[in-house]
Image 1 (cartoon, rainbow, N blue to C red):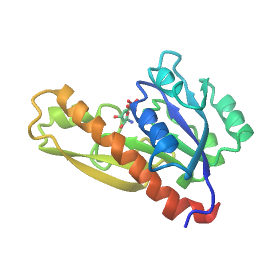
Image 2: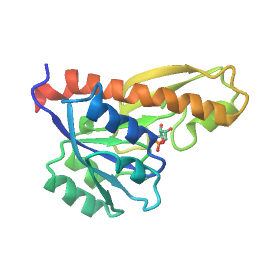
Image 3: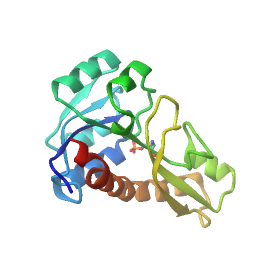
Image 4: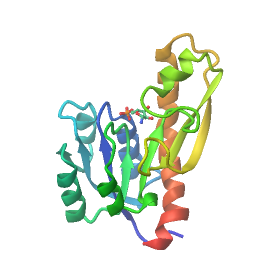
Amino acid sequence: MVKKEIKATILFSGDGTNLESILQENSFGILKNLYKIPIVITNNPNAGGIKKASNFNVKIEIIDSECEILELLKKYKIDFIILAGYKKILSRKFRRYFDNKMVVNIHPADTSLFKGLGGYKWAFNSSLKSTKITVHYVDEGVDTGEIIFQKEIDISNCKTLEEVISIGLSIEHRFYPEVLKKVAETIISPYL
Ligand code: GRF
């Protein structure tokens, strides 16, 4: 039972294709009325996601300093952080401010098998027939937080790494919003 919208932000560093799908679903699709996303934040002034975010009614901040990010999150009364291709590790101090279950991330591999950058490359180079995408809570380690949901993807027909990435990302774009919807409806809202 949803009691109110969750005030959230998205942190990103790169192309921002997941950021775009989340903002799209939040404005017009399955996340509408579940999350309120007043601001998105990147540490990278050249991030492709900046242009994508500019198509939505959301403030975009380019900030590298964690202290400044924290100040901003307090100012906007943000309860929930969605990491989408954010390439910095959050410090213990930052994590302590937010409950473990209030920060989530998407990882392009099964986090119990592969952590860190390059999940699709790992799957391709390991000649896997299928791999997994993981949405997990973020704790103080790198991709070590509790798994929320995973999605298996068939990559057996992929001849190149580019094909694996393309298939994987297109599935991420549907999967991440679906998981965020379940998280909002079943896990978080009762506590707000
Ligand atoms: C995705 O593969 C995601 O799983 C990982 O980083 C990539 C980000 O892509 N965390 P994008 O910036 O959302 O396009």
